[in-house]
Image (cartoon, rainbow, N blue to C red; front, side, top):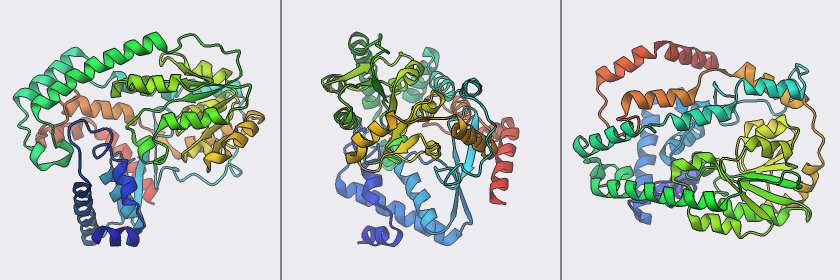
Length: 424
């Protein structure tokens, strides 16, 4: 009854948050939550957040782009209660950050009032190389405690120092006994190796770029990019089928695995086989150049991925299934109904694209962002606090936190200044 009244009062869809929570469903390998347990957790969270906000009455809520359901719940509740939310967002322009009230980054409804710098596509591509977001992501992945020595340190600290009492008190740790975690880690590494062996043997490393094709880059599973911002399109295989059904008869669909899927241990072999079975669909190896596919395709289709933005640098249109700030560029189309897809594909393929709007969009981002590499900052944080840069279940003393704040004093002053600018 409480949750029903809460949902009506604030117009927040609680089951949408809960079913897309990686801990509650699909991705949790340690514990299967019952419906009543999920409802009980939601009730406690809603009551806690309501009480805090009613007691404190804050003017602002400062946050990251929320990754888990409870952080998204607090984020949504603040907005519904009229509290100004200021989040930090990465505008897909490497090494820069935006402070804004939501994922649209507070950009205008269109680019008509923005002055173009009259840069050509060639100049814009050269400019893009100076902030290549893909390189930032690759550096982030490679910096996540990948050294064997880091893994060994994290393992020993987990076995010898972690008391695991939170498995009884914190629902995010339910079922994670030390023995289960160690066995699961070994299984994960074995499965990842077996799956990659399948990828090596069955996914295409050579691609015919002379064919007429539409490019579909897969997104990483279990990420808030899909779970929160495209909540009804989390089954990517089904989305691929929809796209394949919608192609003009003389076009082929190229689907490429995301290299960062290695973090999740790659997809199951049955998933890959299911994609390979879809007629007129080619599954491409994660190491193949996304840039080559962008350059040579007729159109890019992505749920919410960066390739939709990259496409514009090569004068290609794109279609997305979730809201993205760069859809201000007219050649990036947001699909509102899956039944409209065949028609939208046909019209987008024929679209003529000029550099004007991409130039304006980049000028707008330059004006509204500042130098701060959030991905590198996260890696720096992990290396400082976490055992081996991996094990996050550690004790953090006040002295340790103080050292971190002192070491990053200039960074936090920069962020404070940017927040104050936004508030004023």
